[in-house]
Length: 367
Image (cartoon, rainbow, N blue to C red; front, top):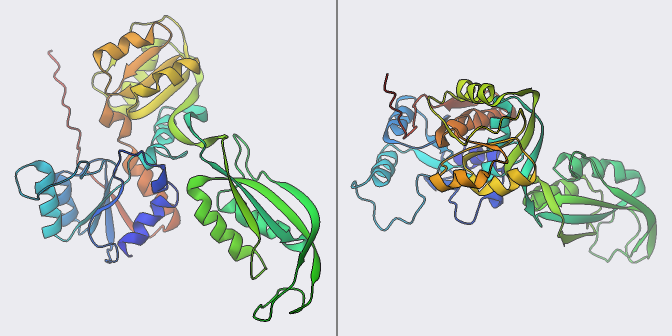
């Protein structure tokens, strides 16, 4: 497959437009038109990961964290990033990143982490503001169902816990085909009336292009009449963090033990116990302390993330249990997430999960 086709398998789900403004997701090194037989999936790109790609004959590495995050003024083997870039180029290995676009994806990094921790009734902790579009399309009455299905299958019509949402108004459409037209109904040069349905639905902004493409393909008219309007509504299908519930409440000690067991965290930092049962859990893979106000507003019993600073722990204010389970530990399952996305679409393609532990943090235990 071509590199751009492999990358597209993921970005069709977690669109690059979902990434934060500071991020650098997408293809970073390599020719997007090049053909590769295998892709190696990793959390980080290290020299060991590139060597693994070489040994496994993978022409593409897709990592969660971007190798190139800041601007490079030169490419000399004087620091890890530049050495890795040189090694990859010398071995004809392309490198891509799927970072905050995969974080902000509804079924992305945080949904995967929530599933590992056994959380149910999931919802985005901090939904994207004004990330929706209203789509209105006019369809011949007998084709309305086909067009609606195409819209929904492409990602339109989701509102909260509901999908396939639309409003449909019958009416009469008028048009006169010109001499160079090829009308589905009517005759050139003659005014025509047809029973139509005005279909209204909502579309996440990052899915608009594929929804419009699906709509056009399903619509019988040569020229499709439609309108797109920006909405101020909150897009509950994309955003940062995740909120969910444990099936059975746990004591704080048992909750910490469960996290340690499922994430393989050898040590975790946390706030003082509140002596309350843990039922509702907020989380964010990686560095998510900026979502603490959202977790408190949602009345979560616990908030799990990584990279907390000393003063961040004071902000819990006894309202919930804050747990720093580690940056790598909370994002380690991103490799499997990307593999699932690729193999769901192309089951026989070789999407290999890196066996290199790229966690930069080690733990000392004085026994």
